[in-house]
Length: 452
Image 1 (spheres, rainbow, N blue to C red):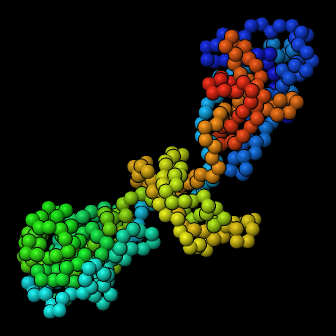
Image 2 (spheres, rainbow, N blue to C red; image 1 turned 135 degrees about the vertical axis):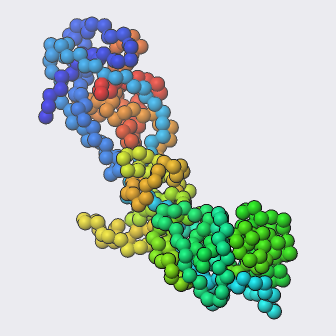
Image 3 (cartoon, one colour; image 1 turned 180 degrees about the vertical axis):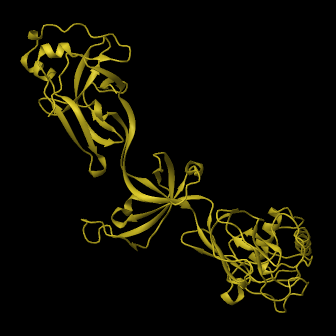
């Protein structure tokens, strides 16, 4: 153990007047001299995550002559009232929210056709059976929000390519996006037979041809919402396909370089809940316009955590968490989803059987997505809130002094520049601070900490 000399008094670096000369120590009772010859704290280790225990190393002071020759300079810091939070840290991964598979679909005919007799089902927004969903739809995977979507030919924003005729048949893939591209409403998702297939926002796949006379339904409302958002209005957004709706479709078709039929087919757009970021591209140019083209994710930043089931009480929906990013930067986040089905995980060596082998998925949205920059797939640490103490008096851990007779104290700075030792009771430890209570310990009181 390293011996640390104990000074007679301290010089504080806050502009306070130095303490007057030490009076004759023989005037002090023996017990008080023993208290003043306290052992100084050399180090403090706070194991907040393992129960809040504190272990300290300290050493006896030297003699009076040594003390008077070693005037230790300390910084003065105030006692503050604060909230202390005991956080449990769990590893996570930063990425983008939602996962989707985008499929191609065959084109519809480029001519006006009357609606089938007897109406088109389902009505009122029901999801069609697979046989009525051309192209297989775009299926959301994992925890991505929103429903599946239809796909098809049509065109996105931009130029007007020459009409390719759209003869009967599946069509040919003529353009694909690149990995990392961001696609929003109206943008080209893929090219088919020289035309652009745009992105529409929605929750329901298009499953039937839409034209004047079809039964009302949620798919009509979804089409009208997208047309209006892209600047093609003149109709009331509802579930009825009217002549005004057909007129808006014709204007859209004209701008896209297609024949103006006034009819919208299931393969005329890709429907996804929101904008997406292109991931792995599986389709290829020149291939038949059928089946999967690429995987995509949402553009919102998301942290995923596989939380051991023995810690599942830490995660509750809408709870706030702290996320430590690569490089040490921190951000705040909100728990958006807590899984209810445990998944098989890896057993941590030395843990009890079944203790942390199973995990539940937890999704977290960053409060400020820009804090993550362009990081994707990066490892992060998520701090879930455990115990919490609100509005308590706190000091830095290194302000604590281990008393010779046992217990802990802090060195308080008197208004006249002198010092006095105050005995304190310790409470919760968190983030390098400790809760303290004791006679004379009040908010704003200045105490000494070792000078950095």
